[in-house]
Image 1 (spheres, protein in one colour):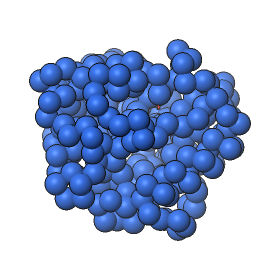
Image 2 (spheres, rainbow, N blue to C red):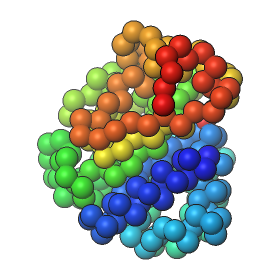
Image 3 (cartoon, rainbow, N blue to C red):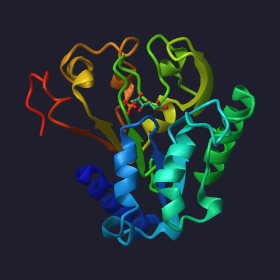
Image 4 (cartoon, rainbow, N blue to C red):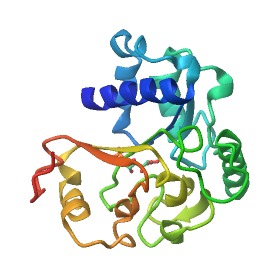
Length: 240
Ligand code: 6PG
């Protein structure tokens, strides 16, 4: 997790230097909890100008913000309650609302933040995410882009709501339109149970309908995979 914390701190410093703001989309699930807790410690927290950080989410479960399944709650309890991000800079997805309304409201908020009332995100710093943190599900999903979902191929909307049979809940998620405009995407993958899927995603044929994580390919940015040894066990090619 230290590599992920260093990447966060570095990206924040560079974004704030260039555009006086750091726009980051946090990942959900359980893996990033360790990263968030580390960022909340003095060793890292004092290296981030939190007043200039704008926090978004890559996806959200359609539950209230204090629900144990809420991605917002995970980040709030492990990080945001411990660092001075201004309340106005927290842009959560309103999981308690009607999913379609929450998706529309979140897209509007994103478009406001990136000064892009219509069309795709820009490629300049300040008009896109500086950093998007993502996880990898053992079925190849990322954010809430699940196998077979039309959102994997979305070309217009930045945010969609879809009922996901695999979970089974309504989810609100960023689409590849806005993820692939990011300056940097960092995947955090941990655990032996992810190894087979990670091997297929990184070493196998391109099949995003089965492995939605493969659709992540920033046009003017980079992707980094921060993977522990257990999750890397099935990788054929050496990735550095
Ligand atoms: C979510 C996440 C999801 C997550 C993966 C991995 O809302 O669940 O956005 O994409 O990153 O499912 O989850 P774990 O880190 O819990 O394995």
